[in-house]
Image (cartoon, rainbow, N blue to C red; front, top):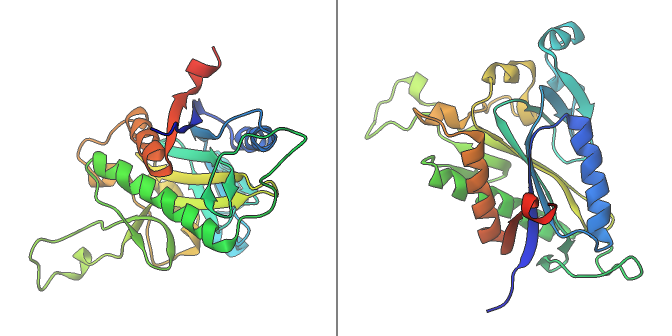
Length: 261
């Protein structure tokens, strides 16, 4: 049986956004020169709005005074996508993975021979996003939540109300699909993925009132707590994400506590 490459999992608790952003950069550079294996960061952020490369300022609905009263920071960052919210009760995952034209790969190399330089071709970049969506969908299914991908849209989606055998449903039951997980990515010049996904477990959903989430005015946000009477903890969701991550991307998931004792 072929050995799986390791992926180090850091379950980090609450981390300020800028601190996590800087740590991604440092660890991605270490992965690029072969001194660190692929890495998955799992954490929560304080209240934060982030804008990606396609971000539009008009999608920020709360003014500075409103944001300050709620303790919200705003960052314009180098991931794809528009604006999203991060905060307590939301599981954020940053996979730092070597990507190659053939797909995901981890090739051991050193600072004198970097063999994964160059940007990921578009088809593989999209394929990687679809794999992240599949990971989240698999993890949610293990938690009892039915979710899916949507044609032409990034992220993971749920149907807030699914009436049983309802032929003439009242309008309030006919709601559009809601986004339960947002995805925004970057692949750096060394072919290392950065940024990742944000899965709503049990956050304060009122914070989405301050933005047009992902620039999609017609699609609301949802959380696991909206779908289940007894939502799981962040730790439970983290465990399912780690399991699905290893399965879909064919990694041996290794807890950082076992590596950095």
